[in-house]
Length: 175
Image (cartoon, rainbow, N blue to C red; front, top):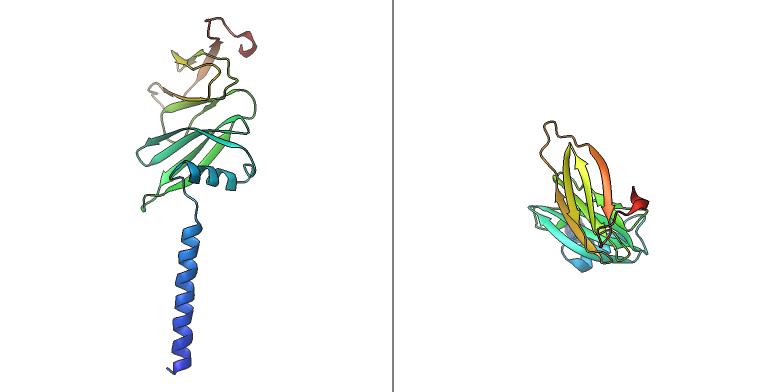
């Protein structure tokens, strides 16, 4: 090989390594609050939205973040890669209301995200025939978790939602 070909080959390798390193340094991960907000704002439908992180929860290699997007209850799910970085996997927002109810990934839990206009202090719901109760701090941003009951077939049936205010009175608008 002549010197020109060797120089061209070495230059190409250096450029490719530099380009790959630059690309890796610009990837966004959900490793901390600041980077989570950047990831959310980079996603279609969330660009230019006001993002408020409410709570970050880690379950083994899965990170679930409850947040408000323009005051709407939302969540984003990350999975930890082999380098320890949290890579975005799923995002969802409640389009109406002050409380969002979500079923993240493979967790056997229900996630509730509330904003500071939420007047619900308690709810009950029948899941597979078992009545479960969950409380919320009214008029505060919050994330709450409810464990799902065991299921024989992996399916869940939800019935009879009831919602109560901080005095224990039934909130009829949610009936």
